[in-house]
Image (cartoon, rainbow, N blue to C red; front, side, top):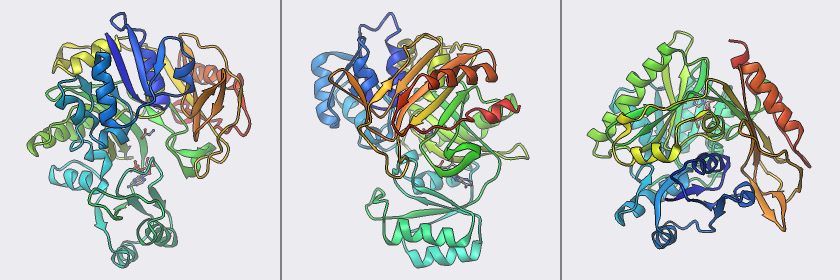
Length: 426
Ligand code: AMP
Ligand code: GLY
């Protein structure tokens, strides 16, 4: 069959890389793809991003299965559009994608269904928001309501930072993020402490299957310093997700969420990603929902997946997930993100990637913000590459991932040197 992967980041490169290994798959298209999917002879890039045009193209091509990577096409209704024309696609509808696309929606949803999360208030009026943080005190967390590519959250350690974030997001609307009814809105929530993990499941509307656990590094610099980013590295499994944490995440967060969406008349299908905060007491709280896989979590997760991804996705679009037992490589997988100069605030584009190691089954440099021109790969976005490798244990996976990094070169390349440190200390 012909398969379409929607998106153009590292996550989509990893999904397409895994998809092409399936004996059931004849051809994999990636829309729009990137330099990495362009240079892979087994993958074909398609320069269409408009949802309706993409559906028309997919129909004409006889695409049998579509898998959506990023949140933007989901929030734009790509799943609704494909389904309305009888096409098989894995992802949530536009209404269900609000779990990610609107923080106000997801916080109200969690409150209504008793799903553990930080307490919060929602504001459109800056004066009221300022008064609220004065009452609550710091640390406190200010979040723009709407999709902001990981940049819409300020964890304010002081009141001054909180006030500044409110003005930035609400008064000046500097992020330019509009929520569903238009205009700017913020969610202000209490500060949670603990260790974060990414908990990602597949939902077919009736059944839920957890993927391997993973953990991401959100801050730009070593030792979790510097600004928040979309993620500077990830690994799987996440040792912090003990069997007990896993059980609590499923029973207290994932299953009530699926049931709650069903009760609210918005059945959930697709990947569901709960960002967990595991508190020192062992309690598990929801930091956020994403209606997609994580990036860069997908890269190490796909490297460990031994099951046929096409088979899994078919089952997931036919309410047959209960018949699937996912098989995982027992090794540890680690991915180190190589970012462009200036990331995350103002990434520079157009630097030539002058060295790139050849892919192996257990060590792949996945592409994200890259483009190919005349046979040469150039940077074209903030997160450029993700060097991902398998190893026996955390230390070996880390060593092998950084060996891969050492083989890559482009001007201004920045990366963390401590990806996996939390897992190493466990
Ligand atoms: P979000 O996009 O909501 O996951 O937020 C991005 C990052 O901000 C998270 O991965 C956390 O590191 C941090 N964060 C978000 N909400 C909170 C909170 N209530 N308490 C502490 N840190 C938070
Ligand atoms: N790596 C975090 C995310 O995909 O949201």
